[in-house]
Amino acid sequence: MDIRKIDDSISVAPQIAIDDVAEIARLGFRTLVANRPDHEEYGQPAMADIEAAAKAEGLEWVYMPVESGNITDQDVERFAPMIRDAEKPVLAFCRSGTRCTVLWALSSARNHQPEEILSRARNAGYDITGLIPRLMQQAGKR
Image 1 (cartoon, helix red, strand yellow):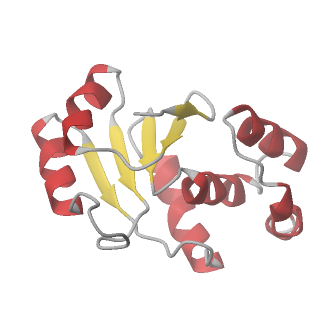
Image 2 (cartoon, rainbow, N blue to C red):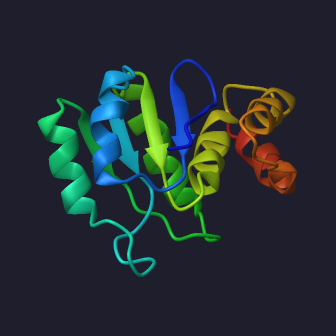
């Protein structure tokens, strides 16, 4: 498992296994968010199985699948309140962690400076400089 901390409220990870859920709970995460659609790739665990494991461990479960490379403003509009209201800390996962990072970045742009967002993503191992125009667009909605 490769958990990458963005800030104190959210971390992201590449695809997790069902067996990882107990460790996620032990590490203190309170909410588990899946941003990966079921059946996106052959052999990935079923989201229903991860959900069952999360609930068995007392984690809040959020299934918010987003198409890789096609994150819409509507996706950001759904992600922002979910993250704001979720029991913290949150662990969000997808295939590589990038889509979760992008959702976080775009939803944070109304409250944080782009430089801070880019820095946090970079510190977690994600280069999202290509998002600068969209970050600026979201910042304009403050």
